Length: 307
Ligand code: 13P
Image (cartoon, rainbow, N blue to C red):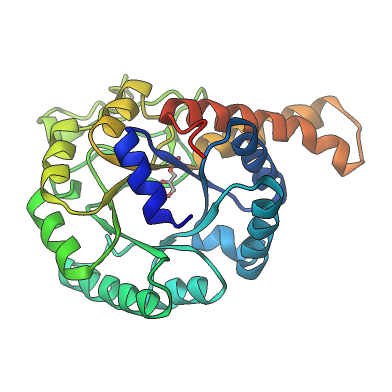
């Protein structure tokens, strides 16, 4: 099944598909095993750094093997490709979803490169989905120890989104409406200040406000934009906001940091307590921890038993 059909089904059914970011075999195993057990559609994502590490051809081949073994459609998405060249290289290596992120370019430049990516991909295979990005999603997939200040200009403008989708021809659009990449603090509880957006002073040392999404803006974008909408920075967003977002048209939620935190914390704890030297005896605990996060997210997104 191709991704547009998967998204259409999700939109009609009021649920969303998780994109889980990976860079190694253990993470892929954890995600695919949970998806199989819960019969959930899934998308594996790799940023430019993640795919450089695991290998572009390697991950598309590995995903194919898991697809055969689980019987699930497994999309591999080239998350946050920052140039036409990296998007093209991913497509050429067999990626079945291409995300071009031109959000740091001025609007016209973003539009121009996005259009070029769409034209290239669609001329080769119209079934491969292209995701664009408009508005700035701040932060990166890590644990932040300082507040991130969101500015009005970071947020996706609904009218501009409508124009961008029409002119670029993207299938889906990543939008900014209060979401950031990463989580806050050691306990990875979500803390972010919306600062200027709500006309508030940014407290220097906290306490910071809980990350809060601007659902009204999402509704406005949804009404105007004729494309599937994507929520980046899914880690650390409250379950209520995620559910409200899905109710209002989000069909894909990207998760990375919470998987990384579960992976690294479990590995650190295991190695601190054990003298084990056999790799395959170390990884099961780590895989279990990642699986717990994936299961929690798939249940939250409502994507289980949707194959
Ligand atoms: P998080 O790291 O906040 O989960 O965001 C991941 C993401 O959006 C990848 O594109």
